Amino acid sequence: MHGMTPKNVKKRGSKKTTAPAAEVSGSTAPLNIYAQHADYKKRHMAFPSSAYLRSAAPKKVPLFAYEYGDTGAGADVGIAHNWSAFDNIKIVPRYGALSVPPPVEVELFGKRYSAPLGIAPMGGPSLVWPAADLAMARAAQAARVPYTLGVAGGATIEQVAEVAPDVFWLQLYRFWKNEHAIGFDLIRRAQAAGVHVLALTVDVPMRTTRTRESYAGLGGEFKPTPRMIYEMLKRPKWLMALLTDGYPRFATIGPYAGQSPTTNETIRFARQNMGGIFTWDEIARYRDKWKGPLALKGILHPEDAEKAVSLGIEGIWVSNHGGRQIEALAPSIDCLPAIAAAVGKKATILLDSGVRSGQDVMRALALGAQAAFAGKAFLWSVGAMGDDGPVHLIDLMIEELRASLGQIGAASPAAARDAEIRHPGAWAFRRKK
Ligand SMILES: Cc1cc2nc3c(=O)[nH]c(=O)nc-3n(C[C@H](O)[C@H](O)[C@H](O)COP(=O)(O)O)c2cc1C
Image (cartoon, rainbow, N blue to C red; front, top):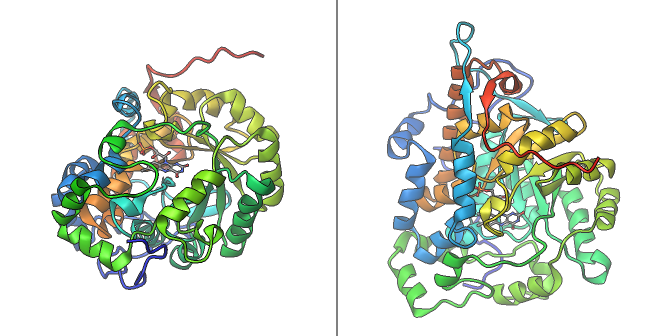
């Protein structure tokens, strides 16, 4: 239960069912390897959209695990706003030019990926499904899409470098003690591990609470209540995975918390050492230390995006943390057009919060993002399908994206920007300048 390092990690998740790695070496040939895969058809019948994964997940994992991954702040109003913001974006198609699904390879920060779609960083995927971080990393590597390890996640930087060497992005929170000694050591490890993009999360200035998570018995240290133990016993497959893989939380941070610390000791350590918001001065220092592409995650205001770009930040990750901080935050998709207009020519724009389908990815591309990321949908996928979940969800979203782009007559991800689009929620910023 207290194991910090996933055991037997190499034995699981590398099944024959994983789709073959996509070729991304500049080919313009369609990458439609996914739909032709026999397993894909079977999985698609069982889970034809992420909504089906979401409804299956609570039947497969303990309730507290599902609640952790699915909840937002308060009464989930922020999540509802994110989803309805996407749903309200409508596009008028152009016909007569395209009759095969277009290729969707993209270049992000100088590297080719098979689709403008990635996995957002998360702190506790291993709570939803033991060793989920590595299952997601493997699936992303097989499909050649970005996988972002959360610094508070359940796999170490070094483990992910082994299973996802070509698609590895890393997210950092602010370790402020001792002049950022841990933060800078994490940069050293990331550099040695070949991380492609480093993302600093800037949208957690406060520790907020999530109602469903608290009510389910979570928050802070992991102390299973009798109800939680009962929920675990009702989910034997999850329990087996837990016995095989342990409860690998905060794996990357573990070494800083002492010799073989328990999970709760590491959680306590993280709480004492991690927190607060990166100041612009600190961001400049991280910019200096990190030699690769740097992104700021959680930007919603175009002036923050401009400030970031002025400090040499290459990636603006537009996000409201998936509605998990407070409910009143604007949907990131609504802030995207103003941010793209302000810095789109100088920076790579990424977006998350509310992405549930390839169609949503298309909407984000049409409004100025170069790639869109999903968080919760990947947790639903591991909840519903275990290690195979992320493989299926990536296949599904790429299929949906290609069909959506083809439907509106966009011959590439970039061509989505030419679409005739109506976006009622688009934020009109009061600009100082
Ligand atoms: C369970 C969970 C844990 C998360 N933990 C982190 C984290 O540790 N660091 C971070 O930058 N974002 C974290 N996020 C936010 C995601 O990176 C992403 O912004 C968000 O999930 C996107 O919204 P979506 O869930 O609607 O796709 C977390 C999200 C979830 C659902």
